[in-house]
Length: 133
Image (cartoon, rainbow, N blue to C red; front, top):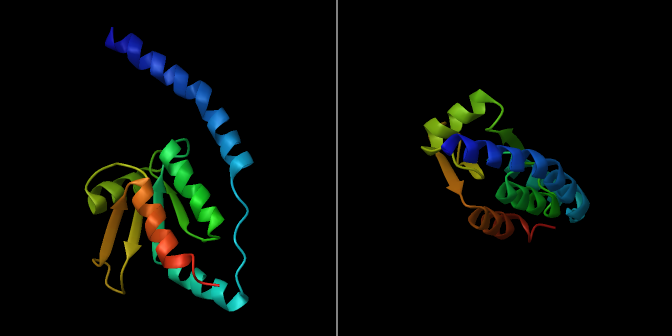
């Protein structure tokens, strides 16, 4: 019975994945506009950030939309398809849960914060980047 349930949900995910990706494309807001100097500042700050995500995870889609709205060039790392990113998420964050924002605080490789939960990530990004113009 467990096998039947597992395959049922895999089938549902298979059907819903393209719909979710098309919906993301159609409903993603236009990026905010900044001055050239403000955008350079944002670009430099975003070099310290990486988002670990699954392509069709609804919470990851929510964070990607917010990233686009704020016009942030954050590196997206697919922890579902790329084993190297999955291993980094597990060893650094302690669990394979997405979305997860990796925030490098300084030059030291060990100075890293791992932020889970889409609402917490969106709040952090808004507080840090929304006022830069």
